[in-house]
Length: 222
Image (cartoon, rainbow, N blue to C red; front, side):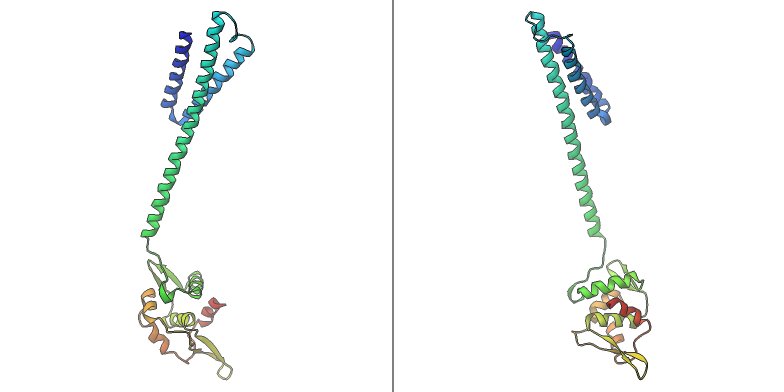
């Protein structure tokens, strides 16, 4: 009986040592050993090589040896599953750290944020279309305008003040008509686009012909 116990313990120690030495295949080694113990023991019992229920002393020792072997197999399978859960925990922690790191990186990066009176649904829509069309781009926490100042003033006037082009059949051209929606946010827009005097550029063109490329800007409002 004592020999069987030591034999099973020695076998388990060898399996654990192999699992430690080959950590990459530890779960495979543990499960393979557990299945081998289970299947081998049951197979030997099934074909009669081992008779765990024999009435003599030898049978009694064989019975307990069989039970200990099966318990050892179950213990190895349990260790394999515990190893799996441990790996899951490590992956979750790593993913969590990656998410936090990514969030911190994103927070540290400068991006354009429309605040106050600049933040409107129409502004978001038009700016997105203007970026897609190549008229403007993001530059850190600001926008960079890639065309004339008066064209930018025209677009912003349409966004924030309700300005619109009015076509004259007599002159066969459109004129810039100011809207009555609020006050033109000159300071805020000048800071956003790093382009001063946008308000003045707009005021200088009141009731005059719309700037070049205004029809392309008008498409952003459709």
